[in-house]
Amino acid sequence: MQTSWIPFIPESASTVSGKVDALYFYLSGVTVFFTLLISGVLIFFVIKYRRRTAFEIPRPIAGSHKLETLWSVIPFIIAMSMFAWGAQVYFENSRPPKNANEVYVVGKQWMWKIQHSTGQREINELHVPVGRKIKLIMTSEDTIHDFFIPAFRIKADVLPGKYTTEWFEATKPGTYHLFCAEYCGVNHSGMIGSVIVMQPADFDNWLSGNASQQSPAVAGQQLFQSLGCVSCHGANGEGGRGPGLVGLFGSKVFLTNNQTLTADEAYIRESIENPSAKIVSGFSPIMPTFQGQVTPEQLIQIMSYIKSLQATGTPATAAPASKAEATPAAATVTPQLNRK
Ligand code: CUA
Image 1: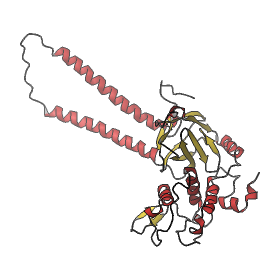
Image 2 (image 1 turned 180 degrees about the vertical axis):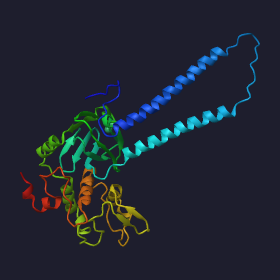
Image 3 (image 1 turned 180 degrees about the horizontal axis):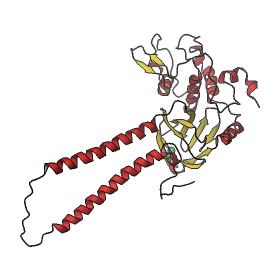
Image 4 (image 1 turned 90 degrees about the vertical axis):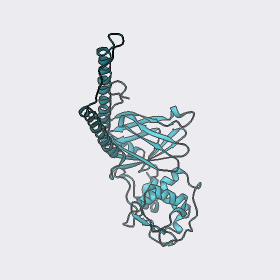
């Protein structure tokens, strides 16, 4: 594990880490400057204006509009610069780019379970290629955890029953610390791991070396059959008792209460666990709840299957890194093609 040339500062190894550091040094610089200025002036005045004779009465001070304005306007400008710069870095850091590779993360006491969109699973390790955008979609099986990679300057809570995301693009190959940064029970301090950043070619090798595992979308499709979802939500609109799911993810949904929303991870999760919360216009609230019947990991698989149902009518191919893998539909229809 590397550290930076500045003591106590972790290595800077992602596209945003330099920007976070610059902001941090600006804030620290302003703080140090004013601390020194104010304490210096304070000490100077204490000495210069000390009482020299007993019963000495100071000269009365009338006040100065010029000074008052100056020491209001300058701090205002400095504070606004912090706000604007901070907001800019925050938005860049918190909005995952659209073309990112997705990786699923499930936290549980006390380990990180990670699955790539091509099916590879890892525990307490995350292998990623250098120079590619990676989006983590994270949830928890039990309590609140927090996925923290100091070298990338990213950190986000991982909550039960909810999906949070963070993203990064690693800039240097190497091995970096991964921490849980939310106290989550006795072995919280042991909930650690490594992020291994590899050259894209090495990463593709690593990926194909572990390619025998089923992708989440394929597992989700099987769950979709075995849980009976397919009898109401036929992928091509058959069934008819529930809304069709092809092209659903990311699209606009019209509800019976005249609301409109975008079908995202939170909406799909809610529709599985609490189906009557939001009813799609034209349908009746007949779907039973699946709360407690699907684990957080299975929920991710079903979600991943629904995401893979693109408007073309066939499930989309998996991420580009998985040349070895067939499309989820093809993999189920013709499993023999997938065997090695
Ligand atoms: Cu998980 Cu602390």
